[in-house]
Length: 394
Image (tube, rainbow, N blue to C red; front, side):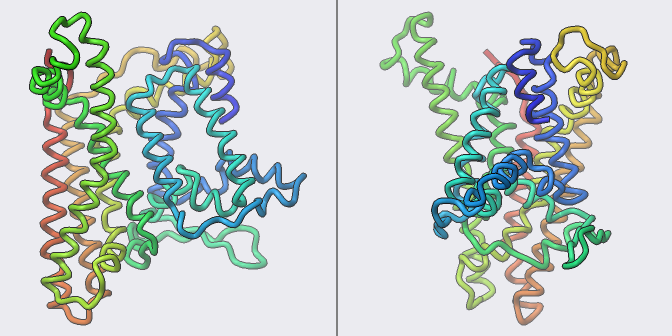
């Protein structure tokens, strides 16, 4: 499927809606498959196309698996975190076309193969490859658990209570917490940056302060303003995860003070980090599920004609061609329900984590007062972003 996405971008239809790779990568893989992993487990660890290619190289060059250098422990999950933010930037501002998407995928393929050869395949696909880390985190909320035991090549499959693994583990590295907060902040930014409030703030409110630098003639100033607008948006995209990081640590510090915990703020922050994942999933689902509903279904017709040249391989090329317009009221109520449910689950998980961490119920309850306020603040912020009018107000 990776190779097909690359090929259709180079040789297929230039119309983004008529090319297989745009719908398959952005909607089916990045969105729908992410939700599948979140609910049914991390099948990506076996299906990762870049790891499969690396394993293929390792069959011919044994030293490739080991890598030329030892993976620096201090890097931890920071490479994946940086790559994730770069991926979000491309998604929001990269003006992706079928051709450019193929170029990005080809470049990312080469990058992964080189990185795996430098630090070892196991290390790179655990710490560095962004989709490995993303889907590993979200799959911790799955209700399906697979366990491979020695001497048994087939995994044992268990059905478990959703979110149970979040109560039984916590990240050991700040870089993994940073990745989670980047997921949360970037989804919020995606909803915010397309709102009329956001657009108006730059093009109307800040415009008079920029005129000394770009000029008052709108025709000559516009190209400069577009460049400044991209810098403005990129700055906020980078700054927002830092803001979320500071807010989260601030509430953790208050929790430590109220509960008189002997643990450090870093230890507490890491212990409660996974309680944020239901909010991440709820934000993601509420923002993007309409796209899966309206565009994802079109993969059925695109699969029959992936290059957009008139083929009909599976006799489905004419299916679901008409635009699908969801009911706005239904979408709003679904988004509202998802965000509220996600935050309720986060509060519950944080409470269970606190009961397991502190020696007394009173100390656990006290520690959760700031966390509850934090969850409420995230809820209000998420609902406020969803309620903002979208589009260009100019």
